[in-house]
Structure formats: C-alpha cells, structure tokens
Image 1 (cartoon, rainbow, N blue to C red):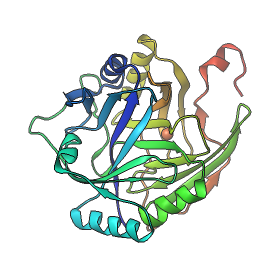
Image 2 (cartoon, rainbow, N blue to C red; image 1 turned 45 degrees about the vertical axis):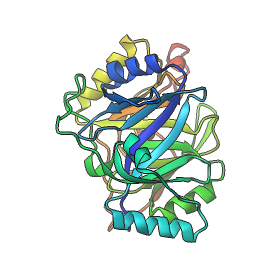
Image 3 (cartoon, protein in one colour; image 1 turned 135 degrees about the vertical axis):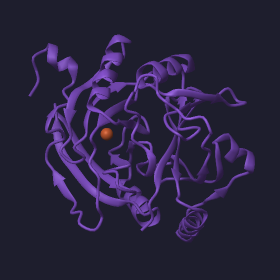
Image 4 (tube, helix red, strand yellow; image 1 turned 60 degrees about the vertical axis):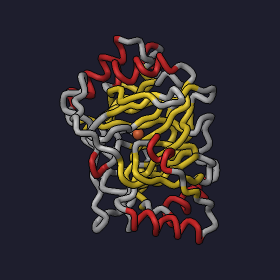
Length: 297
Ligand SMILES: [Fe+2]
C-alpha cells in the first residue's frame, strides 16, 4: 500500500493580481516567492510552496503534485506506471527546483491532467503563520487538502488511480441536487478521508479544491472574509455525510470553486468499509441564489 500526499497545485489564471489578493486576504495563504516566468508561489504551512499560479487563458488546474514518501517508493511507482504503458518523464534539476522539491517526474492521468510525482519538498527555516487562519491549516501526513476532478472516462481514471498509484476507495455519493444528477467517487491516499474525488465530465478539469483548518471558528471567519471581499458564495455552511467535513464553498477568481472546512474524518484501512450515500450533505450546503427565491429543499 502506497501512501501519497497531495503536495502542491498549479493553476493557470487569467487575473494574477486578483488571485494574489484572494489567496492572501480570503484564504489566508502567504506569498512565498515569484518564479523567473512571473509565476506566483504561495505557502500555507512549513512547506516552501503549496501553490504555483501562472498567468494564462485557461483559468483552470494546470498540474497536481503528489508527494511520495521516499525515493524508493517513487522508483517503484514509476516502474509500475511504465509497466502499464504510461509515459513518465524524468525532469531536469532546474524543473524540480522551480517546484521547490528535490526530484520530480511528470505524467498525464487518463483525463489528460498533468501530474507530478515528487519527493523532498523544500522546508525553509522560517516558520509560516497565516495572518488570518489562527488555528493553521491541517496538512502534514494528510497532504494539503483534496481535489474534485472531472473524469470523462471514470472507469479508466479509477483503474489508474487505484491500480497504479495506490489510491483506495472511500465511498461514493449518488443523488440529485436541485435537478442536477450527482455521482462522485471518493478516494483516499492516506488517512484523510479523500485526497481525490472523481466526478463526471465538467467544463473545467477542477470542480473544487478543499483546504482544512484547525478550528470551526476559522471556517466561519473565512466565510466572513469571503462575503466582505465580494467573493461569490456557492454553498452555505454545511456538513457532508461521508467525510463529515463542516465547510462552505465559494468561487475563486478563475470560476472553479474552493471548499474551506474543518473536522474531516480519518480513514483506517484495516477496518474501513466503503458505502454509497444517497445525499451529499447532512445539512446545509445550500446554493445562496435559491435562498432568496425560497427554493431551498
Ligand atoms: Fe470537497
């Protein structure tokens, strides 16, 4: 069993100044530096770089960095991928340096999303304390949070993530929300309930990314910051039945969403039993536009 961690995310964004203000003032991240290409690096914890934002037209996820625990594990993953016919490219030292890691390899997932498998993230001497998130972000062995990705051929994506990268099935949610069918498969790569979830084909690669904080108050305070800064709330505060995350959803400057949560469940593989849920929230997570119209179900 291989435990990977969601290590870093790359976004291609149309409006980099808007993203910098949003990431620091609303999410509570810190600027860690700028690349030679004008990209912006962001920090959330001890690790030097958790997000890389580059200016470009897609306003979408550009790459996902998955951290392997050591070189031996990375070598074994690369061998397994190669054996299955997946093209894996080793990179030059300067490419790893730009990601602030010691070593990385590149490949594509079945949806064409660029992945980077890496080891050795840079940890600078100076500690990071978010000016807004007093309890800090929940990361460490759980990785930076989770992602919900578009998977046009979900069977192929499930085989890839489970059989080749070692993800395990957490559960599935199949239901309807406000007339829209929902069918999402949740996968874990460590004790975090899910680091990755796969939905149906969407316009963008990324539906949302989730950041978890250490207190319920810090979720409420982030919601207040979002509202005050004019960020569009997409789902009110609520709680999911599967990962039990207390969270809200709002829109990033690129149109895809972020989830900001607290209290996520941990998985113990020895006893875990995957189930299928017929609802996506225990309570809450209502689209605010329906509140005003009196359409909340
Ligand atoms: Fe989520």
